[in-house]
Amino acid sequence: SAKARGDRGEKNVVSSIKRLMGRGADDIKKILDNSPYDIVENKPENSGGMVRLKVGGRELTPVEISADILKHLKANAEKAIGKEVTKAVITVPAYFDDAARAATKDAAKLAGLEVLRLVNEPTAAALAYGLDKGVEGIYAIYDLGGGTFDISLLKLEQGVFQVLATGGDTELGGDDFDQAIAAWLLGEI
Image 1 (cartoon, rainbow, N blue to C red):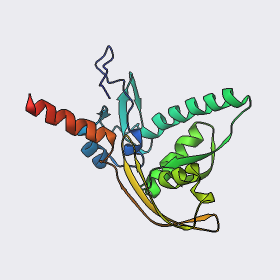
Image 2 (tube, helix red, strand yellow):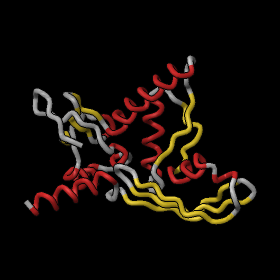
Image 3 (spheres, rainbow, N blue to C red):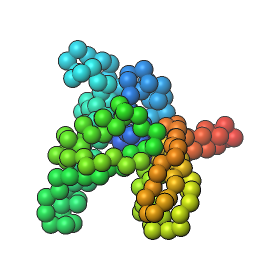
């Protein structure tokens, strides 16, 4: 995505924030080379020493940015169904470790949502496609998103999925393809 700048020179783009969930400052600095975010140097007053990013004139943690996105989705759902939404099942990349899953739950809590369950995105895709009602067997499901590539091997028996294996890469998504193609094109010009 394009890097939009505000009046003070800050970037106003939110893109692939999932990549930063549950990550430490050193990990985030590696990723930020190819990200639309400016990192705020760690200050003692930052809650829990979490990394803050400059976005739209504000300094926010990845959890706070994710909470803002979830609040927006919650409001859209409430408008569509005409009643309050307080609970959610949230999909997460298959590679998410315990820290990233905890950060996702924290974001949901900030958004006013109780997390009933976190479901790996490839598993959610299989369910959405209706594979749980299909032929028993072993399925390879991949999710090539904007920021990630995930794959899961699922075994379907009697309408129940068992996750046999799962993995992924936080630096192999559509955003990365876009950047690689743009770099190649610039090199050709």
